[in-house]
Length: 270
Image (cartoon, rainbow, N blue to C red; front, top):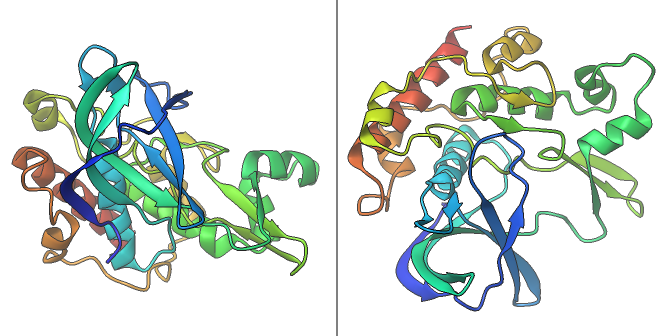
């Protein structure tokens, strides 16, 4: 199973962290780092970071939850590990959980954001969705739209979809799904916020393809039900949250599961 949780605390204070733009418009700072391991790159990222309080968000947990969910549904995606670690940021050491992932590009592939690829190759007046269909990516994009509704992904902007090109093999494909930290209940920082959160609310989201509503974007699928090779079942809850018992409040895990399962049922009923 992907989405491993490494609970034994690691000393990762040697990592150098850089700040990245938070494209979703939410408050906070997100830090990224990278290192080399066994000849390949490993990429790390933190949840929402506050210079005074340390890591205050749970976006990294969201990545693992979605990783495991996509395993169950049979959707190609970037795999993440969750690592309990000490890190150093701006001269202070913090104990936290971080996400680690490896490069998903195959040998010989280069990447470009879908936003830039569309800008340079779209026909006059061609929508972003129709552009993807014309390039043979309908199944991948339709699956992405369904997933983003189920997890209420707020941050599927034009750089969070990538095109992978291999000039030697003459291939062009959409990269596996990645970057799902700003989904689910990422904005809930207190028990009261968790309790009040409406799991079926159609919140405004940043979607490069379609509109601001993940629910309305389901209309692009025309009722397709062949997107997932797997099926989400009530017993999958244990698998999705395995290893989180000492790291996340039970109320948050309960609400996250209810959100995933209820929104999945809405998609299935369309």
